Image (tube, rainbow, N blue to C red; front, side, top):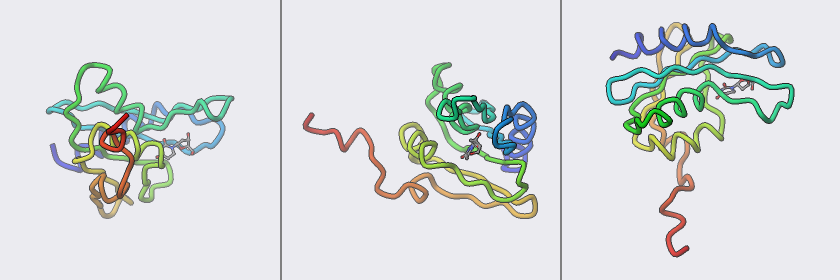
Length: 130
Ligand code: THU
């Protein structure tokens, strides 16, 4: 699965974004064990209940028993590079700490390792001794 193809899936998922409050639509496509899981942001009148596109895709995979998360592409209605928020980075750290994040400005594609986006992140290893 190439990055461009994954990005196409993310753009298609973005069409389902529910973002009446921010008007900022986000789409994500996750490659996990050869399968694609898509997600979009789903906002809520109680703003804190909003779910980001990345977590939507990741939770779909994990809830279906797939934890072999490899790579996630993120796009948005900005057309520019869209970086994952801190909460999504933490969730990526839990399930795909060896994984890759793909972003684009529609001209170029950038890849980041989850580890470089959340250096020294909190994980299960920090709970040793509990
Ligand atoms: N959003 C995402 O879906 N992913 C991110 O990583 C950044 C933020 C959404 C949440 C909210 O619906 C809107 O973008 C504005 O913050």
